[in-house]
Length: 352
Image 1 (tube, rainbow, N blue to C red):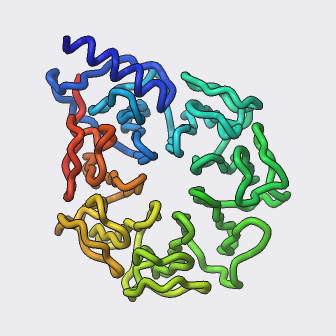
Image 2 (image 1 turned 90 degrees about the vertical axis):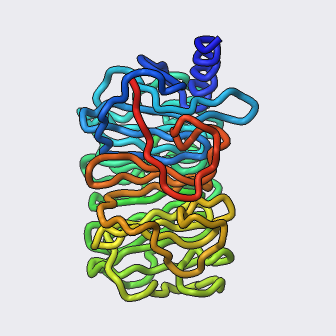
């Protein structure tokens, strides 16, 4: 009976994330592996991660299907980066090639079709520097610094939807980007751009994260700034007032930030982890369901390295490469072997 449930879980997860598995153990009954994670991406109801050897892992599920509650190894290729969207996944291999799989209703995979893919398909033959899967579209930067987009165009990255990569402008100095419902990007000169125009005149923006109707940005001096919707306190300025110009969040210095649907997670330069905004499923990780309009520290650890905010759940990596999860877990997206929601970080274990 256990094997039957394993098979059902694989079928469900394959439908959501779109790949074939090499090894798995939903019950965690095998030997625990001491895996060091270097990258993680939280999607809607599934998670993907890459370990230090470049191996890709996935877990989670979808509505009206069985769920896969523990990490499963995906294929045998070597991967450099990965991004989970609503129900599609984009990833770059160690050789710089770009691959996609999952839902393709809007052409968000970029393979020239609107056909869903249950295994990775290569997108063109170019080499890519970074990729970000939005809800129903994808943005990516090539190795030559050019910016490209495809999929749903509701928020206007191009004139129409596209099922193949479309170059955005002719500039070759794009450095970083973030895609959610909409997209923001930063050039090498420190300017920040939303589609069609430069936002402000500052030239000291370092990184940006686009949430649902709001953005959070870090400047070169490490200060944190927010703009946009603030109904749940997701900007972190101590209010629930929307902002149509950038407002500074406190006076501390920050290393990285990730804007989710209606909440934000960030890591300070001292390695502490902080969260604010909507918290009705405990996805801030502070042990409560209380919304926060100002940053609240998550635990007391000072060794957090990266964080990813999904749909009401959060994944984070510590300096030792261990992976931690909390929040909504109905589809096993936390990867802790259960479908129980967590209000504070729990370690994700990997099994042979």
